[in-house]
Length: 116
Image 1 (spheres, one colour):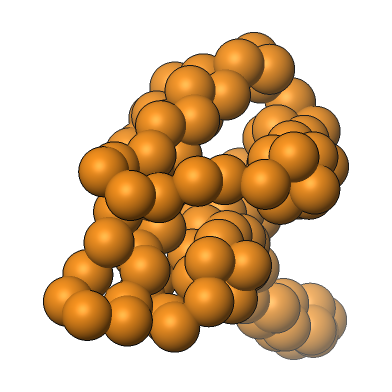
Image 2 (tube, rainbow, N blue to C red):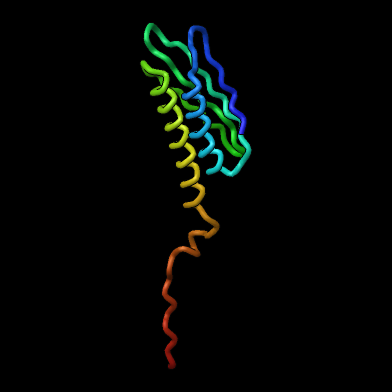
């Protein structure tokens, strides 16, 4: 797993937060089962706001989330939870499709054979 952690002007990312981000994104990577490069960017928004922007690409889809909060940890947690929701939604969609066709899933009773 690679994490490109960048911060904008006047934003410092504590070591505790970078470890927390690495742990949470590691779970996402394990869930997808691929080697992924995550891009995490922190920026100052307005007077008291801080935003966290998380982006990565899997083999089939791009994932992107942004959250703005008054604290940097809250913004990171919100952005990562949005990413987790997107991954879960994609996996649920893939598992619900499966390999069966609609004809194979519907149970049709065979007519009983009668002797005439």
